[in-house]
Length: 275
Image (cartoon, rainbow, N blue to C red; front, top):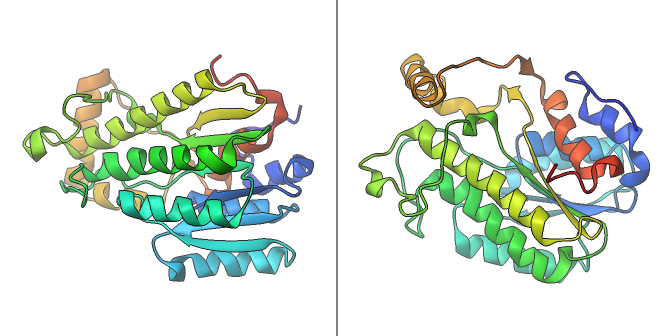
């Protein structure tokens, strides 16, 4: 089994496990997801589906992939995870275009943003970070993922520590009791529970499910807690819930892609998602 560490990059993982990339297909999206897709291009995936809200933001990723490997087929699918209608359209488009998906990487997120509800009446972080991925994955499971050797990778976070899912009130009393970091934590705990449920329902040789924490990485995800007052408030909430706060050492985007790619490609971990 290849040995990976804190500083291992996504490209290093793909090069070490290149035989598991050949002829594979799967969706990926934005942020670290873009880095994951770029890393995969260093091997020989058959098709990479890139899902995102706007194609213009995906075009630079497509260009980088083509510079690395001109043989990779690329497909953009418009997807707004905060909209259940958009998720259903995207799932239908993906299912119509491919017979099989080998790897689903549920990576998109928003973090600690001001109170808002989606068009479906759901708190925006819970809707985007969890429900959108939950719906997309289940729709794809109906037609394209339930094949031998498929994997579902859900990105969670240590930002979920201290969080809980308000099963009777995911909307924080319609915003009255809303705490941005608490809502983020709720969405990440939900993703973790989703992974556990998937892993318990399927034979891992057919569909394996994993939760991954990519690490502490500077991306646009943190835009709402860059303000010192917002960061202080988030830290105070975490300490109140857990009794401590310790900031993790920063990783690069490439190092952050490593964890997801190990979960997506390494055969040694199959069957271990519940251990």
